[in-house]
Structures are given as C-alpha cells and as structure tokens.
Image (cartoon, rainbow, N blue to C red; front, top):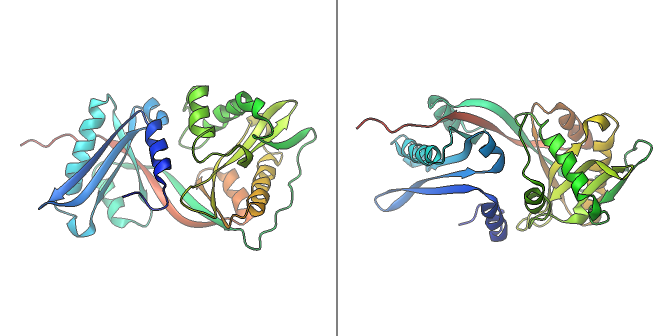
Length: 287
C-alpha cells in the first residue's frame, strides 16, 4: 500500500535516488503489527547517519515490538558503516516523543508545515533590485550550472544542514531538477549579469491534483536582504493561481527566521509540526 498522496512513480523515483535502504515488518500470530525502514540519503551519508522510521499499531505497543524493530534497523545501519540514526516524530505524538527520548534520542530540529489557500489570494510582483530579472528554467535552461552553484551555497545555510555538501552536479540535476515532480516552467530564477542569484521551485505531487509544494527557495549570500526571495515567491503564487492550483504547501525549519517571516507575510499558516531526533544505534540486549 502506498502512503497517502504518493504515486507509484514518485515512490520509485525516491527509492532509485537512495544509496541504500531496508524495509522491515513485525508479525504477531501471522498479522503485521509494526513496520520500520531505514534509508541512506546523500546528506545523511555524509554525516554517517541513516534516516529511520519505526511504526507500531497503537493496540500493539508496549510489548517490545518497537524496540525489536529499532534494534534491527540499528544492526543494518551499523553494517553500512554508519554511526547514528535520525528520524521525525510529529510534535503532537506524545507516545512517539517519549519513546524516542527514552532510547537516547535528542531533539535537534523542528519543522513547521504551512499551507496557503489560493482562493481570494492576490499576488502582485515583488520589487527587484536594479539589474535583476525573473525567468523560468524553461526559458533559461542554459543556467543549470549557475543554478547548482546557488543551491550549494544556500543549502549549507539551512539550520541543521550547516556544512552539508550537495551531490555532484549531474546527480543533483537528475534528482532535484529533472525528477518526476519537477517542471522547468515551475522553477523560477532570479538572474543578474547572466548568472542565477536566487531561485525558487515547485514540487508537483502526481497524486494530489490542485496542490503544489514549495521546494527550496535559495538566494546567494551576497544578494540576500534585497527582496529577491519575496519576488520569487510572489512569482510562484501568481503562476500557481494562473495554472489552476488551489493550495500551496511548504515547510520551515523553525530556526530559519527569514523564510518564516516571509511566509507569514504572504499568508501561509501552520498546519502541523514535526521534530527531528538524532540518536545512537541500539545494540542487541544480552540473552
């Protein structure tokens, strides 16, 4: 069964981009009562960390199923020569937060998911610095290398990703710009003197008609504070309305104050929050 709102093409593309993965099911009396997965994505690989999720049916909790699944994912992670696990827990999931804390995981980040109902929203073009114009990637495919340079600089400045390195150019292009959810006409570039100084792109879900998701909004350090991010976001909103989209969604790391304030000004409102935990591998108990 696919996760809600995910098309099989999207799941296949995500799995093809992973370096490694493991999927586990826990059974009791022949019935599945829990599941876990561990994946190795490029940014986590650089930190020698796997991204993991452990899920147990509510009525089956407190019988050791979650601990057994975590131990199995930890064993796979160690065999991959990795040293730690990271995973997300919804901020209102008291059981999940407590379970993670008891196993040595610590809160290292929080993300807020936001939505914008496009009905009744009007978006006027944002003012740009002199010499800066906005074009789509469809109009300027020649600027992909410059686009990559902006991504490398901006991604490392996202709280929680300090010092992370981007994939090599060709891999990044395949995974971030030419994937099943990417459309060149839905990627907006701020261009100055023939180079990209900022960009904003949409991730278009295949199984959620009427919804567009904001991907990275990035501006070169030397060009920040001049209204470029706001102009790019307004261009996205105008394009989405004209294309018939009903809702825009995005997420913000709570420590990323500039983008949080911009989204608030544009009318985005929080819908839910999740916590990122980092913790040690669970070793097998003595038997």
